[in-house]
Amino acid sequence: MIALQIPLDDKDIRDLHLGDSVSLSGVLITARDVVHKWMIETFIRQTREPQGDDQQVYDIIQPVLNGGAIYHCGPVVAGLDTTEYRFVAAGPTTSIREEPYQAEVMHHFNLKAVIGKGGMGETTLAACREVPGVYLHAIGGAASLIAQSVRSVQAVYKLDFGVPEAIWVIEVRDFPAVVTMDAHGNSLHADVAAHSKMVLEKLIGAD
Amino acid sequence: MRDLSDAFVELIRLTSTDLSPDVVKALIAAREREAEGSAARDAMDSILHNIALARENSTPICQDTGTPIFYVQYPPGWSTLALREQIRAATTLATTRAYLRPNAVDAISGVNSGTNLGDEAFPTIHFEEVDDETLTVDLMLKGGGCENVGMQHSLPNTALGAGRDLEGVRKAALDAVNNAQGKGCSPGILGIAIGGDRGSSYAASKKVLLRKMDDSNSIEELNQLEERLTSEANQLGIGPMGFGGETTILGVKLRGLHRLPASYFVSVTYMCWAYRRRRMIVHGDEVIYE
Image (tube, rainbow over all chains, first blue to last red; front, side):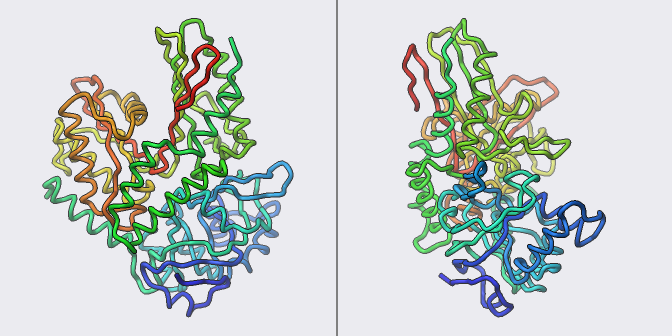
């Protein structure tokens, strides 16, 4: 098990390889479909003007993401009525939906780690090499277990996106994950898919 | 008619936080098949640890508490209007108690209702009147990650060499598993309907997942296909979470539907390992949960 502390530097990232088990600590944010789209449109491709608290939220999350991590997660949160928030279930969501956005977000913020499930595609893999960064696979569905590594909820932004889609700033300790895409151009997902495709062709006798 | 709102809240709590014993048994067996020290084995250990924690703390097994799908079989004389209101009230209450995540998003405006109540299909409620004195309610919580990797093939499919027969169904189903990779939170369970129209076929492919993990199909040729598909899907080597490994699929449940001469659909619903479905039986004053 390799202990990682946010902020992460280039050496931390380049020392990681496919299959490494890591245990991550520090402050990170949750961001999924709506937030990625919002980041891209408002601040990266700038196809829409910042509105409301957009700029203020950007200024707050930008330093958290520099050398930091994004977690693809839409949590179940207790304390919504009292604002004494507590994560009760917080497993990863499927990452591939962020494939159209992830590489640009990594470059823009100097984002070092993307945590999710199911893996991502070639564009993100290229960004992992360039930034450099890694994709960390958490155990899908292990939501009560992972919630235990969330020590505190520091803040929430964009709650109007809905509880699952909001930006939750959380402090994690010993968050467990596996490196499935590294900064050296390797993807476990590509390897497994190539193997299963070969077996499938044998099983169905396709051309 | 009695108010069953509290009983429905308990059904939701149980379904979200306490995985059925038949599923847990299959997951334990899957863990044993993975090599010691492998990422697949570690993933299965985390899954089993999580199941125990969720049960102990009454917290959701998975944060995606899914689309709540209720299957209600009611005796003559019961009001489906009243039952619907009670189910909707219970869904909201279960959300405030954090057994469910607020999951109902307006597709046009993008606004999350915050209560898990949306249009008439959210939560989904299927009513069926039965000639019985017992009210039986099955609840399935169907997560979005695995729902997204479901697939419907219209046979024949030239690329797969899949014709309009069970051999074609086999090819279509294996193609669906390969496409899903680990994205549906493997090891999963496949519900497959053959025939019907596009809508009825997908609906039946979900409902067939109410069967028990270790039962067998009463139709022998479907039973054989279920076993063969499970074995062949596992040869793909996708494994838990797509990490590579021995168990990609825990089981397959098949059923046929009448179809038009022109149509031959194979609808595959992929259910993640967090295969959450529970039953509530109301008989007189007694409420039993299975």
